[in-house]
Length: 255
View 1 (tube, rainbow, N blue to C red):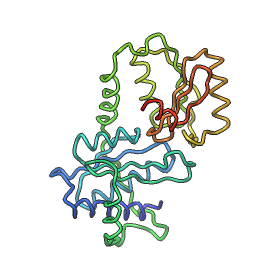
View 2 (view 1 turned 135 degrees about the vertical axis):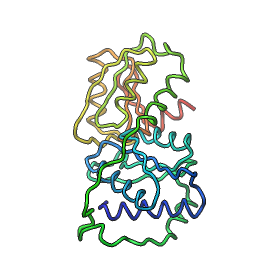
View 3 (view 1 turned 60 degrees about the vertical axis):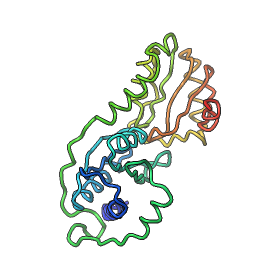
């Protein structure tokens, strides 16, 4: 994921949007990312590609993937999310969203057909930018709307009297998750916050997370523990004993 590669991927995505007339007149593109160490650099590479192509990058900061997607759909603009989801931190990726949502198979087919011209003089031999540039001004509009969406669709005291644990780890949605749960009336206990990236998978749950959930539930007398994967698009919830329900099981129960 060198700068040159990220620049090329972003450019062919923009070419696809333009060729299929999926751009609004503003030609804005929202950018967000997770908490991996490489994320800010890749976000900047995408922003520089957007600017070089003649469009306007809008930085939404570090936020959940669904929050960025929702913002793009609401504003009718494209959105680029830099994340490797639940895989190890040394790997990263880019999720492309059209103004209608995440790219589909027909979008991918069109993107593969795009011809890319790599500009001369932008990159060194290792694929890094030769010249640095400032990051775009950041807006919290996407995060604020995502928070309001959850607080407005439920009764304000719907979790009143409950004691909920927030397993923070390195999930990009850890703060907004705490704001939502406490905003709905629950008492929250936050634990497990990490400055280094932890690849929490909500399906293939790590044995250490299983043990920690049971320990925390017993120590803090919790009604539930909630968390997400790295980019906060998959949930992981426990019962009062700390027994974790995989995301697919939670989905069936909700359905």
